[in-house]
Length: 185
Image (cartoon, rainbow, N blue to C red; front, side, top):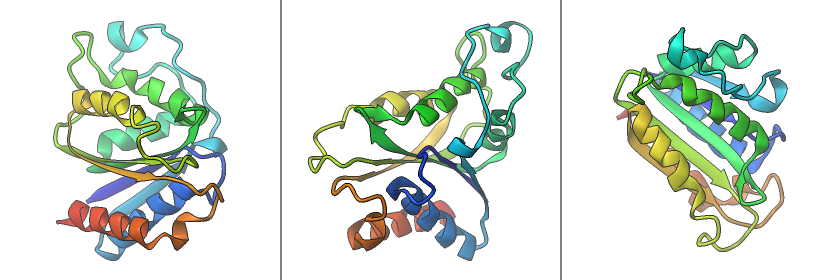
């Protein structure tokens, strides 16, 4: 089992990162091959809307630090997508990355990825109410379904805001461990 994590927070010790790393650690203990990518440390551009991935190549034409990330997604059995909420949306780093996944689609919008992958979407927010920003995940879930992710998990963290508060939330740590068990089942 190969599991990768795309970490969208600019903070290395953010809540979304802590939850993703909880899942990675638990799956590594069970023998998974794990890899993580902290987007804020990478040098990459957003989608250029050049359509080369639809007309001449079966992948994104840009050659930057995101190339290895996109290739790792192709090879992974499961992908953890983790981001904090910034102004009612995923972080800019994450959105710029996700736009580049457009290259996973053929011109007819069928997926180029192997079907049957599993996704874990982690979204942390300072807002206490989980009803607020509940519209974010469905937008990404639609694309994950189109890409062929057949099993999808969602882990949302609501307030408080301290960047390191996830570790003290036993409810979230338990959810993360249950997701890890599911990935390794």
